[in-house]
Image 1 (cartoon, helix red, strand yellow):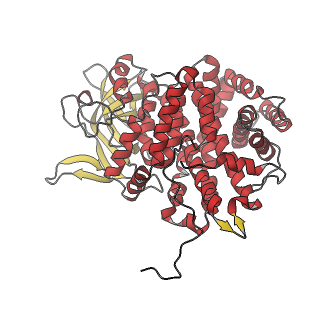
Image 2 (cartoon, rainbow, N blue to C red):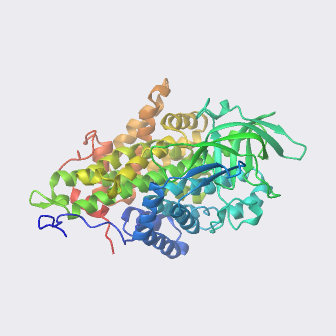
Image 3 (cartoon, rainbow, N blue to C red):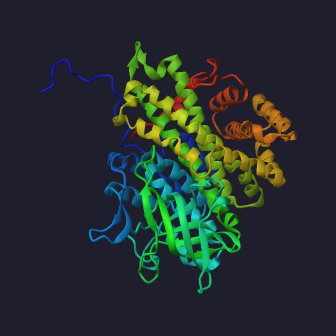
Length: 545
C-alpha cells in the first residue's frame, strides 16, 4: 500500500495513442506541398494510418521489447551442422512486418511513391528505427538491380511486395523478400576499391564464385545481398542469394554479430564467403557505378531517419515541458526553456523540409532534379545526420533526470542518434563527394543555385549567405581542407531557402537569424529573444487525440 508521501504529481502523461504523422505540421505540410493532388487524399490516409499505428501503446511497446532483446547468432544446429541463422525477438518481426506492409520497400512503382515513402520513413523511424535498415536496403536495391533488366524483372516485384515472408527459402517460393548489402571490408572501410574479396567466373553465364570476408554485412537474415568483389575485369557488383534455387543453402558463414552502440534490435554481421555462388549485376569493373543508385537512396534514408529521430526527440521534449511545472509555471512558458525548445524545433523542421524536398526530386526524375540531388543528397546527409546527436541529447536534457532514465525512451533515441552519420559513408566521405560533384558536374551546382535562388530577395540574411557562398565557391584552391565548412554552408543555405519559401514566417525568421545571420550561439537555446519563439514551439507540439 502506498504511503501518504507517495502521491505522484507534476509528471507528464505518456506521449501515446496519437497520430505521429498528423501531429507533425512540418511533415504534413511537406506532403501536401509535394504530392500530386490526384493522390494526396490517398497518401494522407495511408500516412495517418501508419501514424496511428506508430503512436499506439502496443507498437511503442514492441519497439521497447525489440531493443531490449537484441538478435542472437545461431551458427550451428544441435547436431553440429552450420546453419548461420539469426534469431530475433517476436516484437522485431511484428515491427518489420508492419513496415513492409506500409510500403516502405515499394516506392518505385507508384505515383508520388518517394514522397509518400519518405514521410512514412520519418514516421516509422520514431517507433521502430531498428527495422529501418532492412527496409531501406530493400527499397534501395532496385536502382542497382536495374543495371540488369532480367534481374530487375525477376526480383523487383518481390522487393516491392507488401508481404513480409520470413524464413529462409528460395526466393521464387516467397511472397516477398528483403535485401541486404555487404560492401565494407576491414582493410578498406569506406574505400571500397580496396576490397579484396575475389570473384571467379563459373561456366554458367553471369555466375561467379566468391571468396573473402566482409567486415559489415547489414541485415544478415535477408533473402539476398548486393556485394562488391574483385572480378577479372575489376571491382564488380554481385547478387548473392542466401538460399539457392534448388533449396540448398548458399555458403554464407556468419562469423559474429556486431555489438553496437545503438540500433540494438537490428543485426549487423561479419560474413565469410568461401565458394559462395553469386550472379553478376552490371558489367565487370563497373561495381561502383552499378551500386551508386543504391548508395544515393540509402543516403537519403539516412537523412530521413535522422529527421525522424529529431522529430521524436523534439515531440517528447515539448510534450514534457507543456505539462511539467517549475518556478511557478509550465516549463514551456519559461523564457529560457522556450528558447531551447524553439531552437530544437527549428532544427527538426529544417531537416524534415529538406528531406521531403529531396524525396520530391526523386519522384520528379527530370534532368534538373537529378542534378540537384547530386549535390543536395551528400550535403544533406553530411549536415542533417551530424545535427541529430546534439539535438537528441539536448532534448533529453529538457526532461531533466527523467530523460536519463531508460523508461523515458530518450536514452534509446540518444544511442540511435549518431548512427546515420556513420552509415553509408561518414562525414568526410560526404564532403568529398560534394567536392567531386562540384569539380566534375557543373550542372549540379547550376541546379543547386537555381533552387536556392528561388527564395532570393525574401530575406536579407539568406541573400547575404548566398553571396558569401558564391564567393567561397569561386575559389576552390585548397578546398579539401575546408570541405566540411563549405558543405555545411551549402546545406544551411538550402534549408534556409526552403523555409523562407514554405515555412511560417516565425520559423523562417528564426532560422535565418540564427543559422545564416550569425545571431545565434554554438549551443541550442541561444536564439535572439526578440523572435516569436512561442509560435515556433506551439507549432512543434504534438497533440495526442
